Amino acid sequence: MTNAPLVAPSIRELKTSLEGLTGPAPSFFHESSRLRYKTISFSNKANKIEETSTRIKSLLILSLAVATLIKLYLALTTFGSPDVLGYQDYLTKIRSIGGIGAYYAGGAYDNPFNVPPLNIPVIRVMGWFADLTGLPFRFWLRLPCVLADIGSFFVVWALVKKQTGKAQWSALFLLALCPTSIMISGFHGNSDPVMIFFVSFSIYLLEKRKSTWLSAIAFGLALSVKVVPLIFIPAFLFYLPTIRSRSIFLLTAAGVFVIGGMPYLLLDPRIIAVRVFGYSSYYGVWGWTRLLSAALGQASSSHPSGVHAAINIGGKVLLLISICALSFWMNNKKEKPPLFIQCGVVTFLFMALTPGFGIQYLSWCIPFVVAIGLTPTIIYYFASSLYLFIDYHCWAWWPNQPTYCSAKIPTQASFLCWLSVIVVLMIYRRLLAKKDAIGS
Image (cartoon, rainbow, N blue to C red; front, side, top):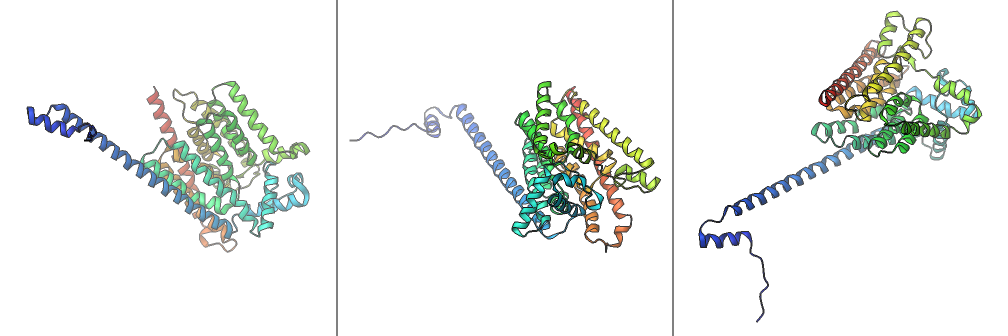
């Protein structure tokens, strides 16, 4: 005769036995059942949330892939903005008279080589790929921007992933499919999206990875693409807690810039400094200087003269002071804002006050606005996309442009975009004031 295995009775069996002997089961059986029901219910809700999150992430990746394919198609099939011809001219000059020679020679549109020297070997490699593959140089010029947008998307996702509400997911969808990004990276033909990726990655490494060294390396690479990230240095330095960490950041970033500029910085540092740091974008084509030029007489130029030259210099000084003062203020609040928010404020302040402008500058704001919500993202993406579409459409049909290109429509679109920048800047200001009030 075999002994049956001992099996612990279930709660239901105990309950039935007790009811047969003594009446209804004690209340702890009811409490246990309710607790088990709540546990199962909570587990089901968690599973549903996880399933929803997985679906949303899959849709985000799909949206990013669709936008990337559109950018690649545009990069392969369109001629792009006049900047494409400028970079093709850079390649010709670099091949014929060398990297330093390109800084001396007048480029397309009388615009000499004006980017940091790390761009010289990069442009050579683009030309080499064009010769090797038969794909046009303009495709290889725009490919790094397309890839940089992918990197920027995942960096922004990592920086805002704590904000997982419906509005934040929607803002990330807009970032993945942003028409402004599609047009600038896929059509324009410049390196601004690459530069802003390295800035965003530098912020991520400092905020999330707490690595001053790695952040400084990424920032140095951003400076090696274009020197525009100099506007973020006050925010970075005031954000860092100690003199030692600030020194490490500055020296490392400067070291990366210098190493990336070799051997050209040794050959002729003076001409590089003059061309790169003396470069001035077009005055009178954006914002308050466009309004002023319309009132005083048109003066759209990279080197305005007379009263417009004085206004241009004064505007740059005012902008520099404003950025430094704002960066100091944000980092001396009771609750210091995240560095990503700070750099967003600096970017929109720059776009609001700058006396000079290039239309590809609109790409600088694309990643930062996502962090402050869906509404400002919609406002900026809509206005900038509209302005870009009108402007690029006029470029694409030059010299046989549609009649509206010579009318006031492009000017009105530009003004609308500038107003959207100011609106987003006001939203930033309200957000910072609200956090300050909570902190007090």
